[in-house]
Structure formats: C-alpha cells, structure tokens
Image (cartoon, rainbow, N blue to C red; front, top):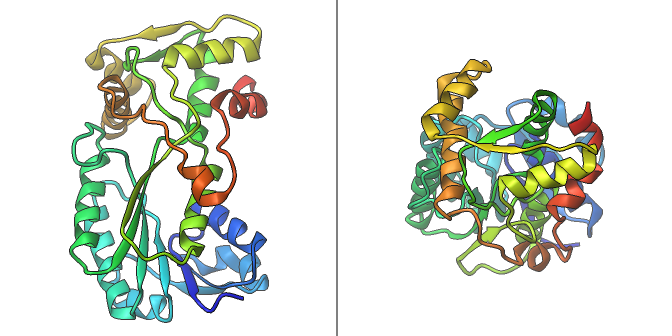
Length: 290
C-alpha cells in the first residue's frame, strides 16, 4: 500500500467518480474525496474512501478538507465565469494543508485558444505556477461524450450544423481523461509537467457526420455556417446566449487549429490506449439513434 494520500476534488461529478473508480481498481491507497454533497459519495465511503465536505466558494472549508493530502487532483469547477476565485481558494488551501503536488484539469492552448473557457484555465495555471507547489497540467481536449446529444438532435433534424469549417478536434472520452488523471495522481513524480490529453486522432465535423451516417444507415450531411448564423441557430433552439457563445467558441478553436494535436498521454499515464471516436460513437449508438 502506498503511504501517500491522494485527494480528488469535485468527486461527486462525472469525471470525479470515474477517477475514484479507476483508483479503486488499482493497489490499495489512502484516498480522500471532497464534494459539496457528501451524501452522493456514500457508496465510495463503504469502499474505504474518506469523504469530506468542501465548497470552493467557502475558503475556510477547504484547508481542513485538504488536510493530510500529498497529491491533489483539482478538477476544474463547472462555474464558468466564476472559476478563477474558486480555484484560487483551492490552491491557497492546498498550500496551507501541505499538499506536495497538484494535478489540474486544464484546456489545450489556454494562453491563446479562442474558446470561452480558455482564459480561466490560463489564469488558474499561472496561479498554480506561482504557488510554489509542483504541478501537472492535464490539458484535456473536448469530451467525445458531449457530442452525443448534439448528434441525436442532428439526426432528428436531418443535418449536423456547426461553424468549425474543416478544423479538426482530437476528441477524448471522459473515461480516458479519468484514467489519465488517476495515473497522474497515483504516480510518484514531482517534476512540473504540462501535457495535452487527447484521443488517438483528430476529426472534423465532416468526419463525424460520415461516421454517424454509417451507424444510422442514412446520410447525415454536415452544414457549415457563419459564426453569427450558427449562434442564432443555437439560441433559436433554446440555448441561452452565454452557452451559444461557448459552443461557437469551441468550433472557432477547432477552425483555427488549436484542437487538433494528438498525443500519447492517455497511454503513458494510464497504460491504456485511448478510445477512437468511431468506436466510441458505435458503442453509444443507442444514445445517438434515440
């Protein structure tokens, strides 16, 4: 059993739970999981995980919640627009608690990508770098999982729309990101590391439409739209303007070539090859065809 204590923040979220599942499949370890809602992690408490309440908006709650941790996985919060203050609280608490190494889930090219989420990730990276703690930045590409509802809607409407042009994205599954994060968290290295976490290949929206056409047994064309028109289409479908801007920014990121880098990070960190986008979509065909 390793003597280091590992801590996962945001552990009741989709990614956090997958990280815990991966850690629990490996050698026995001391694991702490923090969340705003401890009752959501009762099953993990029964499996030996120490569950602690922690609210990133309540700085006073964090130092105690992080106490005793050697390596900490800081999963970026879902409060887009408010994350810098939350992450600042977490980083300061980690330092006070004596954490030795922080692993942070970031975003590719956060210093220059036009994605709306990039600036907060870049500011968090700088904050961690200036904390004096050693770190690993896992710059996760877009989740393949997030394509599923959009593709189901596209099939029902008869076309897949976007504004990415021929730009490509190296989609990675949430499970592969969790495997990589668990590998980085349970490792023993302390050197500062920055790595892009990606799927095994980059694909365009045309490529995705072609894969879905095969799966569905009928043609799904891709329609590329000007950015302003795509934003209006998203808002017309019921999305708030903030979310429409977010999705447009992801497409622009791909169009400008900031999402197409492919790395072997998942394999190197987890020992498992990442899942190809075609295999992932085929495995989730029922979610697409519903």
